[in-house]
Image 1 (tube, rainbow, N blue to C red):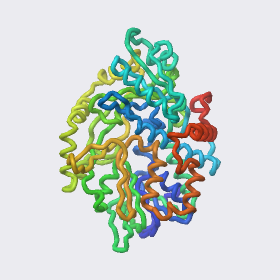
Image 2: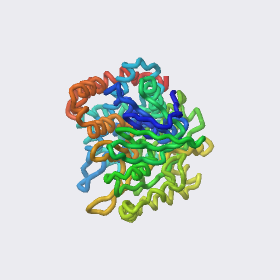
Image 3: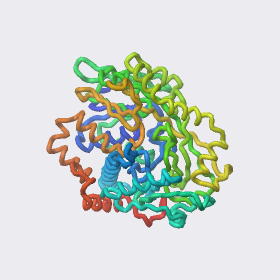
Image 4: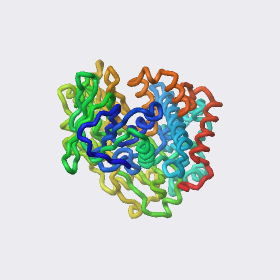
Length: 506
């Protein structure tokens, strides 16, 4: 990969800060829409996708709302709100279409290096939770996007679906599960690096690895000057760009605040760290083949929804459980403990204090998580895997997430879960804050960014045609079109080699 870092002054059309899934997706989209654009990627680490996009630092779930219970909240009247689940499911179908386009356009081989078929399941116990899951299934199955999702309270059926989860469980316990066979496991690190490989083959694309951005300043002519330094040699570089995207994961917030745009005022961040229990017993790994999601503890952030998770990482089948949440003042896994205090400004102090006061259950939850002993973590695992043995699992550090805090006129400050796009009024700079389900919905998010920041070009016949070539359902709704859903899934499954009968990781 081109790592040209010698240019002291560079003029470029687009600067992408952060070499993660968002920047990779935006870079490829823009180059496909306008091959003449010049693009510069700046990354503080020496490799791409080493933070939130790395396979060990995220859940790897192709988030399509098949199994994530936090995407279908229960209303006060007991009914289930599936609107968010439908939006996420549709967005993931958009992502698969774009990946299929890249696979066909560039004759990418070994697709299963980054995406594999794996069933998605939800599992609950207790009468109240079983009632919730039953209602959730009844609501979801009405949507074409969730046709085929199965529900069962039958222990024999559940043992067939997930033998390890049911082994050693009290036969009198009231349990239930749903299963969606169309689920996937995605190695977003591998996907990101693959997209950057395609991008660096295109003319007019430059990479600056090992460079830290020091300053972002708007010039009088409306362009942006981005100043960075090499973290090893200290060499400085100045770039001038017409458009800047900050997709630096947890490192986005400080850079957004440094831009000085009025739209950044009031935004803050609350960092949440994570850990996994990784199975080291091949016999146990072989007996489980599913992503099994449960209900989050009261007060916990969505990224902490527990799951027993089959993964394929670097061609190797893995089994993880977690994540266990923790607290660190770092905004990045390889960041600084000064990240959080350094992000507190006069413009966001009040919203952060108010949001903190209103989310005391989250604070208590994180304190309890930090205080967990190995026995506590094993006890949590045994809720999903009753026969789990401590010697079969080891603790691994996962990624760092920063939950969004923003100013709210009515409440003063709110803690937001999910992703938040912030852009200047003139569309010359944009930033993505937040976490899940970001990576899985990256294509939809970046298309929305392009439409907002490049409105005239995005509305042109040329770009509209190219959008439809990359995403055949562009401009159409899948939510109410069963035939289109089936046609789209048949195509992407064939191109991405997602046959339900294919050996995992083959």
